[in-house]
Amino acid sequence: MQTIELGGVSVPRIGQGTWHMGESAGQRQAEVRALREGLDLGMTLIDTAEMYAEGGAEEVVGQAIAGRRDEVYLVSKVYPHNASTKGVQAACERSLRRLGTDTIDLYLLHWRGQYPLIETVEAFERLREQGKILRWGVSNFDVDDLTELDEPACAINQVLYNPEARGIEYDLLPWQAQHNMPLMAYCPIGQGGALLHDATLQRIADKHSATTAQIALAWALRHPVVIAIPKAVNLDHIKQNADADKLRLDEDDLAHIDAAYPPPTRKHSLKIV
Picture 1 (cartoon, rainbow, N blue to C red):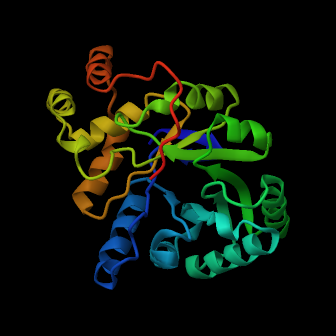
Picture 2 (picture 1 turned 120 degrees about the horizontal axis):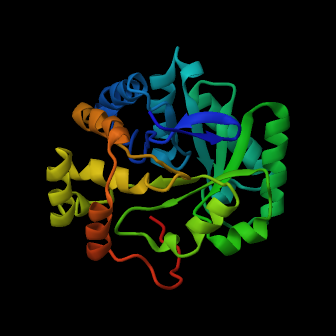
């Protein structure tokens, strides 16, 4: 599995997302099984958030990593409305209880809200001093947000990135590469399935004896600073996600994707889902 250094730790460049997990009690065991299968296949970075199913996804993750915590690089996120001095502390402690752990490896501000960044950063630093988190970062920040943050301790920025949403290539992705800040791509295979049925991606997938999802993942990983966190519950999809690590697209493949999904030629507003 390809790896990248994140906060001084080597982590896989394909991790596991958990958005929409924890929403159905009937799916709980399948979701736990999927995450554990992903761990077995080397996708040991798991991303979750207090927002996902209002803590339900964190509970799923907690069950999945029980007895295996030392294998996992654990990422969670705090709601903006909890990003005050006291709010961050309380939210983190709730997340820790749901996750069944003493420490979160990487704790992110989910998006900007009403509280000044300096207040949230100070709260993150207090959590780090307490040993409740090891590093912190942000999510859904654009270049101007990161510039305003101006904080070398920020370990990562997590944003939407896939062939349908590649506006970040104009300025944000180069900025993060220049500042040696990894970028975590959420929804790397898109939403709603449209990207997975794209004719261009299907032709490239046929050429590589792969799936369209694997092509989308390989496309995101062509940038050395990118980590992708696809979410899957189906065990075949989990294995396909892990196997995408071995796939390399050639210049012809990339040219065809550029023709179908042109790269940005100007600044775009940051897309958020």
